[in-house]
Image (cartoon, rainbow, N blue to C red; front, side):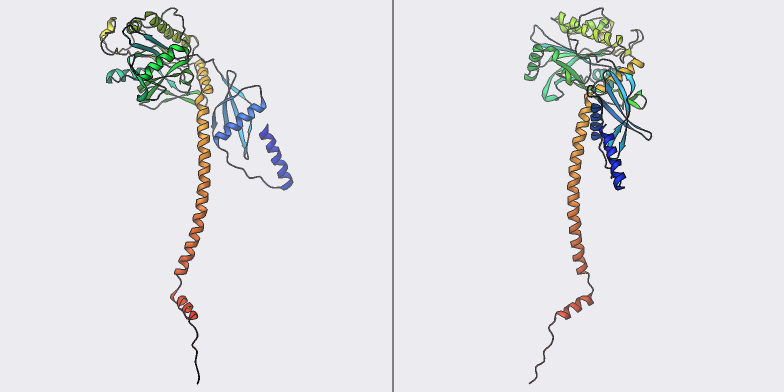
Length: 422
């Protein structure tokens, strides 16, 4: 609306003066802001979320989310303004499902154990997928190299370390980790904070990708990265709203029919020690996540039968409970990647709702503003340098005068001879 009015005003000026108003460049962050403003002015009662801008030789369009649906919005540059076209629906979005859950339990010997859902193979808030293949790769490296991920607060690193995992495993689409809290001020404060408000906290992984992500096309010309290999470095406990993934509100799940691998159930129950009720609740959380992922047809991997699956060789693979000594090794289960129309719709949902898009654009806009300021400084310096160069050139010209010119100037400066007659 505003852009159309501005263009109409430009046409009137051209008709009266015959002059074309000069076009100016527009930054990508400004384009986001202008398109968002035009959408709000067109429909004030609606809330639009611009997830990305696409530009090719044929057209320019934005991917826009609104009330559970994803739209394609064409736009054009009209001089230094933007005009928008009609919205056309791309795919239907699905409601977010909570993902991460944590359970903390105190043992009689004074130690405190944490159990958490470290991740699921569903599109996360950064618009990426951590596949079950990635989870298996992370577990395999941790077990073979004896480099289990450590637990910290809010991704703040070793200085905020609160413990290290002693058991990691994947059950269907869920990545599980557990370990003992260290006895230090950060860990003790975290335990108290969790006990005061358990639903407030979530978990988030840090891993180092060891191969480029696979780009998965979710709609025409729209792709997202899928990570398949990596090294698991750490797990952070942080407010759930800051966790990257989306399954977060299952701390009070009721255990229904059990789907978890019985060997994993046995290991978790033994690790829980005195608090079997807490272990049962945590197992219920994991089963509930797997059930919700399958029932809602979000992106997931189908686990093959135990005869077809592959495992990490371990003394407890014959069904015995894990030993109390040392770390309990993780298990690797071969899976396959499946994607249908509803899974694509779920991907589109998370792309549309990703907080990282807004944060990235704000950061980019600040960087562009700083760059603009730097350019003005450079222009000022350049002008001063030009003036100085002209003065230097003039001085060089003076020095390069011919000897004859210098001789003439010298002779002109000599006083005339005066003769005296007596």
